[in-house]
Length: 418
Image 1 (cartoon, rainbow, N blue to C red):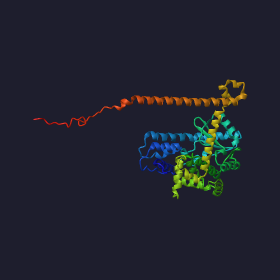
Image 2: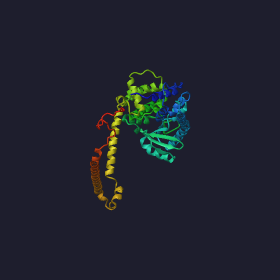
Image 3: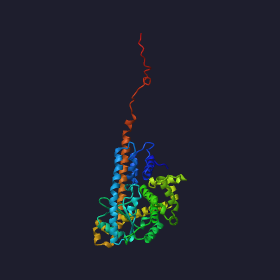
Image 4: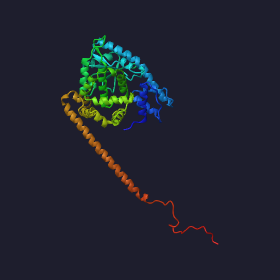
């Protein structure tokens, strides 16, 4: 499983920028358009902008502009999210919403330059019972709900404030859900607040590693998540309560995977120390860059949760298909009344009209099939008739080049008689 040169050079760029080192020039031809697409897909294009600023390479101007545009987005995002986080904390405190914030302000400070921050939203942990109340609060504050691939509810407000709310069900694994609930119960109140809670670095490490593991198992882990984890790890690693962390990781049955993920992060963004068993890390790299399409077999051996997630999705798809089929076969009464108006007065016979509708549909399928078969038969017979009619003419073909010998004229001579 081999990555393209663009993927490898992207990691070189990220490592150089995050460690404040000069970016080495590419050693071979580079498809800059492809590199931008990969960086943008993994939401790290704004960081790459810093890495290409000093390069003498002939980078197409449209591509440079796209990287610059992503950088500008990150510049404007910083102050907006700072302000939004403070305002939301005030509102939640007044509304007596128990929650914790993954403090945006604290994460931003972990980056060499604030504008490099990969986090694109204010992130809030809730109890499941409060999610409905929180939705009402955001809608009243002129936020609108947006679709998100991340498990949770995403709210958006012009000019670009994003807020991601989640509860324990964001995790697929039951042990992770239980860890979330236990952490939430034990969190102390933030200074100056009665309902806003906060995590210490050890608790945040457990939360981050669980979310990374869950995203990896679902096949939607991105480089921006890894960069966010790396700067946090690099800043607070010395104060982690490692014995407690190891104990919890063993209970979650992800201790081995967490270790490999840390080593991979170190290989990409840290010192690049030598790592044994490169096959595992090559498979993990391929898995991350392909969003779970490659390197799956080895990753599943390392993290059995991947197989469980895949099996669950397969069951969900089958259940969803069955649900759609049942809904089509037995639509609700209001729909049936549009087809059979008499149901408005005789709703008790709804079941019989379902059977009548299915019978009519089945009869239509049979008739259409017979008509199609008749048309195909007529078309086939017509083709055979035309071939039979044209066959005598086709058998007689004029000779384009006649040989004098075949005509009995003998050899052609140019001798002049004397």
